[in-house]
Image (cartoon, rainbow, N blue to C red; front, top):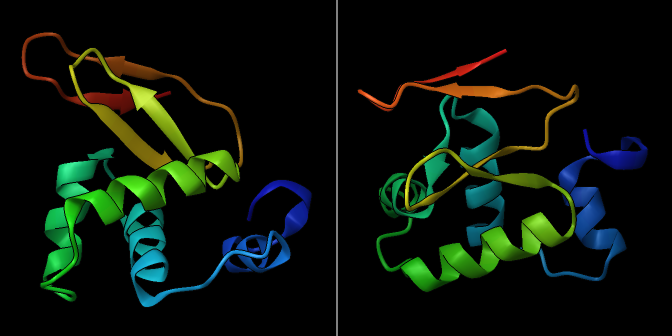
Length: 105
């Protein structure tokens, strides 16, 4: 659930945004994945279902979801941005500089 108790699809509708199959799938991947995916990882997961999905569509969708406060963009001590579903509770991330493992606390 996002701010004001609305489900993410309801937030998109309330803001007048189209609910495309690609947006729905990208949102689902971010919500269901237990790790912290970067855009390339999300693209890889999504291409199994939509082979013609472009990486630029993934980036545009992530930007929209971030602007609507549905996903959180993270800088996890790498050169790539990672994404997670907007958490219900604030938490921090501990990143191992050796192996890159991310632990939430």
